Image 1 (cartoon, rainbow, N blue to C red):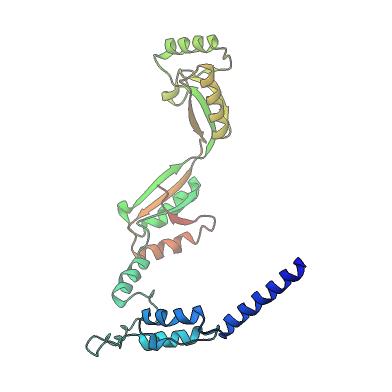
Image 2: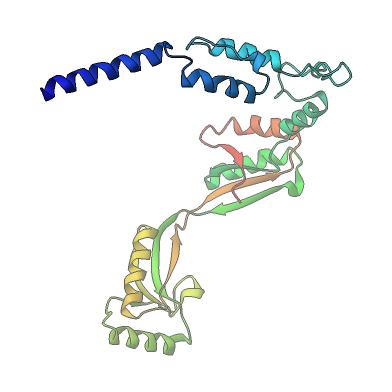
Length: 262
């Protein structure tokens, strides 16, 4: 009995809700509120119902509401034509090209030729004399480095050498040699030689070892061969003098012409 009563109550309630939604019992609550909402809108006459995919239509409506374009006086001026630029911006102008060409024609202020033997140097010097270069020619002797000596510079002659050797023995360094008074280079006489090395790197490594043992006065000197090479340096040559130099040098194919190294 109770279930039948509940069934009929639900049925009646559904019928009433259906009638309200369809308007069978008068205007719906939504319809009663809608005129008030429309009255509150700005410019309600422009409202329109659009389909879901109406982005383009919305853009058209906004375009219609946009303010009119500015007057001709306020409009932007037409773009001025760009100034003509050269076909190759990197190309120098005629005014720039002249100094560049002049710089290209400049020869090194100091030209060096050779490593000549003594006999070839005498012949080359005689041929250069015909160019009348005067003091523009300088002849120099260069010597090849044959070894590097680690040594302690001399001080106070023989007595100074004795003091240094005694100090080396106290430090546990026994491999040394006192340079005699008959040595050709007077600046090294009574110095203490600690070893000869073929490369400067090896000499530096040994100096570092000596310093770690307490011999902080050790130095390195390069030893050069007795028979050197002759080098000619020629300064401020004119184009004609340089051409004559190259003709003379052609008789010495083993030599080269180069800018002065120092």
